[in-house]
Length: 311
Image (cartoon, rainbow, N blue to C red):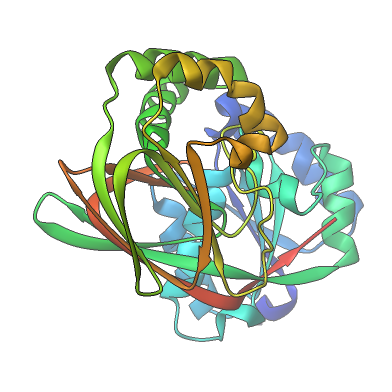
């Protein structure tokens, strides 16, 4: 008998997420899924970007209900798998999350509980929200690539911090303190970049410290660089931190967490459906906490394209 894939949840588990919590806590999580009477098939990722292939191939075989056991990076890979498959419209596929990551910023936007049993209860209730997604084209050397994302893309200083933080995660040293340490270390060597930003045909040229472009509000383990973002309005929220003294960054760290950074005189905010960015020299990019490539960049919004299970 063929498996009833349309009514069976595909659970994509990143065993390395959250300093190996994905692996250590799987027996407990799987037991709670059984207790909640959720029929599921579990597949473990084995290497970076493996979740993209797992999601795409299993959706092609009929799975429409996905559950991510991991962090924001695993969620990002699964979203890219949803866009890669061709069997269903992307909004016909539901995505729930059981958080075992260290940042968990995407889940903050949708009140997804950190506790495993509470997160599974949220999935069981099937309350869904169809959010926007973004796609960015970027370069890696001479090659142009693209990546979908559902939270925030960081350009410039953010990308440097994320790169350092991800290296620490690989060594089992993740967490908020690790992120803050990466901020301070990165400040020592980072330089402002002359950047041209075009938002829906409006051009802005300035010396830039950091750019955040996103759909949701949080990144960096609870920072709120896009405090007014609405996840289904068909627009990117954009926060540009212009040239700023290094000691001013440290003095304003609290503003990054409480959302008042947008009121700083060196900060500008915008909204738009498309964004292009060029710079000299090149600046780097991260999306949903995943380190990618360098400028030039092109961003496009994909309205109401991802169905997520929310708290």
